[in-house]
Image (cartoon, rainbow, N blue to C red; front, side, top):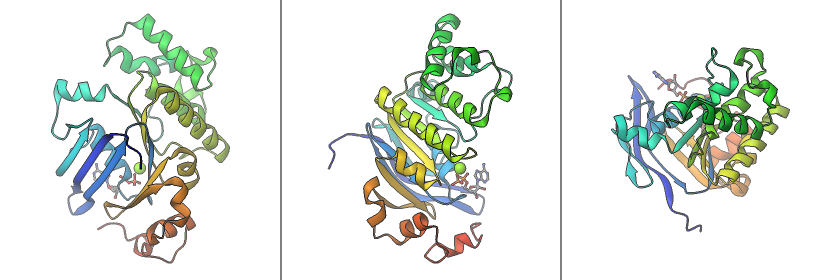
Length: 262
Ligand SMILES: Nc1ncnc2c1ncn2[C@@H]1O[C@H](COP(=O)(O)OP(=O)(O)O)[C@@H](O)[C@H]1O
Ligand SMILES: [Mg+2]
């Protein structure tokens, strides 16, 4: 067993929207320096989980500790201080349409980290280079580049402040398999170079295998299995088996039949 300390400790995390009970007393530990991937079918609450961790959503109950510090219910300056440790690549990249690419990357450096514009630009250019975008692209706008290139810019933005923890929400969704492979490779490279802890959520099993040191599976608001990525094919877990084989028959048939609105 690894002796790495726990970077993110989640206990009893519960979140509902009206009658829809999405997270149901979910427990999960992310160890310092590891790349953990949470897999699960669409609509099972993966994005809701991430949004609770980064403070976009507030849980109904439960605890989330980052470096041993409770973050549930923490707001204002204290929350900003926590968030400066975090970098995130949103599903669909979520770039600012009206800003050139370099400024998208530099945005939080200038706002949250109070770094001056020339210095922030320098860092942004370096990050764009790290994700394989030449400096000629820096003044272009998100609408002028491909979805794959937008993901690269989103990744450059996530790493720009040198965060301790990186979150990736469906990094390969909406791009072709070849570009998915490239993005996964960049994610692995960037996480390693930063020495960061990474938490990725995806329904793309191939991507999970490329990115993850460990894999956790979410189903009905709980983590139903967690293990090293090389154990995924011999997990002896019926949920994991059904998910990785994409089969209709198994414990999750109700979900596959479209009966996810509970
Ligand atoms: N802000 C919200 N208000 C109401 N329902 C939501 C909200 N965000 C997510 N949901 C619902 O929660 C469920 C899980 O969503 P999500 O976490 O986005 O799934 P996924 O695992 O695909 O990322 C879905 O049924 C979704 O409709
Ligand atoms: Mg999602």
